[in-house]
Length: 350
Image (tube, rainbow, N blue to C red; front, side):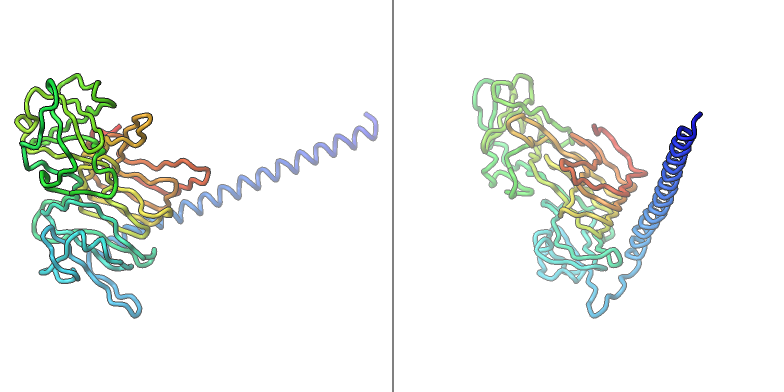
């Protein structure tokens, strides 16, 4: 081998050695960073759990600010809500602003027709807490249902088809008129808890008993008799996200049910440091998301595009049209880190 060839071989071998060394260094740095990140994330989860323990005891004081606990009941009339003997309504609660270390507590055994959409300003060090109070063992229910109280509201439309005007709220009790497509029905539920979700794209497709179709303010149902005669008290469930959760929030002890959209979603674009545990999330989804393609949807818990450091534990999630729990998105800037869903029970979820 000539001298010049030997030089070239040695240069190539040196270059290969440098590349291998750089690769090994990169792998070492990546492994180190991953281990460090794993330790940090594990600690963040421990911090969430510890914050929950702290809230179950007494509130800690913040600098120069009074720490408040708010109470909500189904028949609450207070404009303040800080007296357990004089609670406020969910409607009033949604009009307030809440800060770190504060609590909002729902009365156990009560049913709240409406959505939770609190304005929260909290930090990882001083979190916000949503929980329960009272002696009743039943979890407070957050419901998106309208309940038919006038059986004669059904009108015989044509052969074996009945229709009902969903805009006539005098015929209903429950959540009432909401801001988002109140006539976009996901499913109906009878008084025994049976769910009827066979919604059709057009009236002409109503073929089988209990098929239904929505158009403008009306719902049409295929039925041999007045639907109230066979179903009893009927729940009509439309498109609402029931709970919008903010960053640095602990949510526990609620029974979230009856919506055609999602059970729990994030309130803002950014979401981090959220702990949801010991909740029931059930009877969710079925409304139409995209009319042109008749795309139906509805998740139990959905974090969209971005979420970091969230923990879902010991929840029962059942009867969900789409996913029981999902982190998903539609942009190139999707960022999901340290989102843990463990020790939950999923029943009848896709």
